[in-house]
Amino acid sequence: SLIDDQCEGLSEEIEIDVADLFEANVLNQINLLCNGDQNGEIALEITGGVPPYTISWVHDAALTTETATGLSAGFYTVSVIDLIGCERLLENIEIVEPDVLSIANLAVEGTTCFGKPDGVLDLIINGGAPPYSIDYNGGLSFIDNLRLDDLAQGVYNWQILDANGCNLPVSFEIVSPAPLEVDVRLEKPACPGGSNGELLAIPSGGNGPYIY
Image (spheres, rainbow, N blue to C red):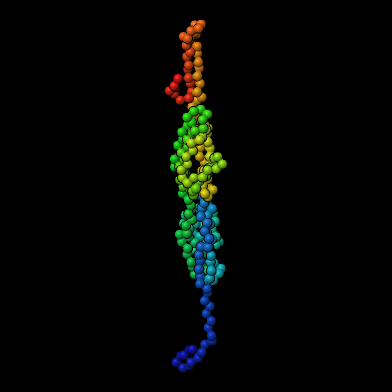
């Protein structure tokens, strides 16, 4: 009602519209599978308020959509403002990545004899997402430490894959002694019917000292 010094009256009905609760939240987030990737994603869910909304991502002023893609690891902030100026600020949305997939230790031992497949590899892998696998002998899987003791002489170039499919090249060589050879020379012929002949054996290759 309205009252002044002289009159009293009743105003027309006043209608007040109240918008739905204005909310902005992270609907979906895709973190990185491999260290150094740039394919992270943040998708927003915006409800209530008075649309349309003005969306501003701090890392990219040109980005005005509800979804940010192509993200590297780090923290992200986004502001959402509705038509009447109400603002919702989402800060420190973190895109995470695994630790760097790396070789912590690689040690090899050559074969003991030429042509003998007993070379040794000791390999320790860090980072990424275990378990790890290599395509050797039909495929091998391991958590962090791999030991093989049946390797033949040669140069090996492998790809280590983690559980996310990230790859790490590994190269090493298994060496081998030279073939064991013996040069036998007749130093002194034996007399007919005698046993006083002499042969000289000169070995090479293999791993000395030699046992005769």
